[in-house]
Length: 171
Image: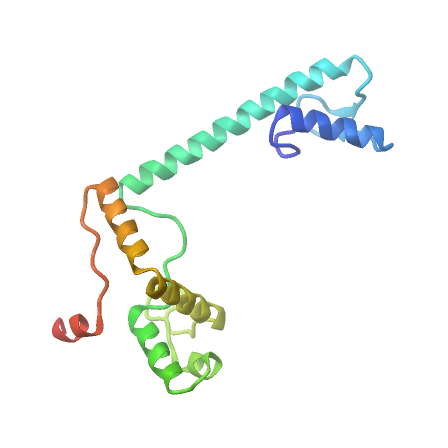
């Protein structure tokens, strides 16, 4: 029941709508297995279990958000690590400036770490990295503000992005 609607009111309204259009709602599992009849004596029981499903869904959501928050405070953030490194992005930008297409550049790039180490990144990954780079270039103050907000939340310094000059001097 918790997957059928976002809350008890939506679930009840959906069940009533289906019944009004001649469709029969049958619960295959859960506390009310069988056919739901909105006019019968099962209506209050259905509403009760719909409210319980809504409560369970809210608890799951709260637990998930709490877990994500705890992980973020420990410095762990979900999602895949980016496939396109800064060096790869600089290569793509340089070669694009020379007139090459992403499709021409892609076979020459290799993923340096992770499960796909040694393979070529997808064209979509390259385009995604280019779009993120363009957004960073278009709104640098927003990126700086996001870094400042992150540092304020975590109480730690955000590492500065490596520029070409910094990369050459640190090698």
